[in-house]
Length: 119
Image (cartoon, rainbow, N blue to C red):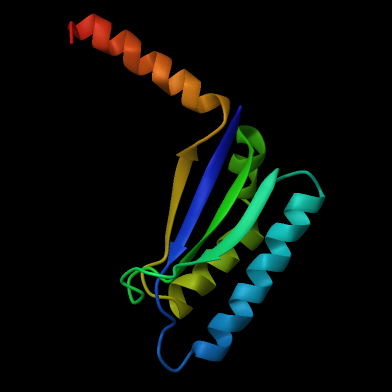
């Protein structure tokens, strides 16, 4: 089963804008390599057009087989990029996503629990 990873970030830390832009490029290269080697099945960066741009300026969506995604999150390079992000970006956050066939599994689970609870 595949899972997703949503990595969100806010504005660049003042005075570290150039390093923050370099981190964006480095992250795109890292994720693109993971897409090319099959670790990821999907990767795309996004910027918000509307939002509280100080709090949320953009995000990355990554998707892949659960074992590969868990392994990726244990890699030293992933931790290094996240650590750099915590020093160069405001409001850095990473969240797992239910995707693909996991959506149907979750819907079935909800239906079973609703039946169990009589609601």
